[in-house]
Structures are given as structure tokens and as C-alpha cells.
Image 1 (cartoon, rainbow, N blue to C red):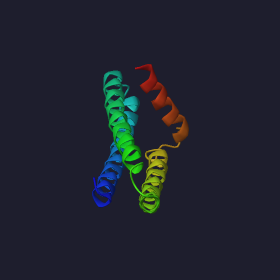
Image 2 (cartoon, rainbow, N blue to C red; image 1 turned 180 degrees about the vertical axis):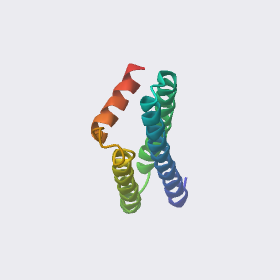
Image 3 (tube, rainbow, N blue to C red; image 1 turned 60 degrees about the vertical axis):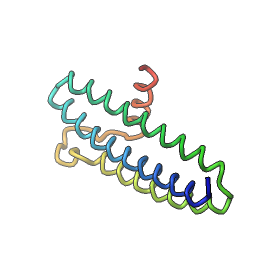
Image 4 (cartoon, helix red, strand yellow; image 1 turned 45 degrees about the horizontal axis):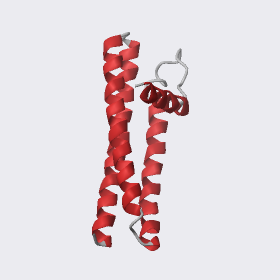
Length: 127
């Protein structure tokens, strides 16, 4: 496979990873509402949906890692900039998620996103 095509496939996978993060943030919002509504069935459904999104993300992440190994160093470095842009987007989404709905509801403590991700990973390992 030529370098240009490999690089494009990697960029496509990175965009799919970005989409997974956006979908995950949406599910987190849905889960917050389900928890507030004490809808245990929906909370469990959302956890399953999030696990599916995480599995899809890991698949794309594996594709990126595998394909990167076949690229010359200078191409990898240019892709690192794209990955950096996605990381910045993730940080922004994390900040938005942490502040979502909590600025209006002063009686709730703002969640820690890192703890939330650890909990998510634990849920994934438990399955």
C-alpha cells in the first residue's frame, strides 16, 4: 500500500476516533439524565451503548497504530499533528462534559472526568 493511501486511512480512522469521543460525550449526558430520573434500566442500556462505542474506538486506535508502523518517520510526524488536534478536541469535550448541567444545579458536585473514565474502563473490564 502506498504512503499516501496509508496516511489517508490513518486520518480516516482518527476522524472515526473523534466521532467516538463525541458519541461518548452524548451518552454521558444521556446517562446523567437517566441517573437523575432514577431510570436504572436506561442507565444499564447506556452503559452497554458506551461499551460498544469504546470497543469501536479501540478498533480504530488499533488500526492507526498498525498502519503508522508502515509509514516513514516524516509522515508519522505529520500525523502526530492531527492526533494532537484530536487530543485538544477531547480535552475540550471533557471540559464541556464536566460543566454540562452542573452549572445550573448548584446542589450537585461537579464530577471528575478522570475518575469517570477510570470507572468506565472498570465497567469494560468487568464485562
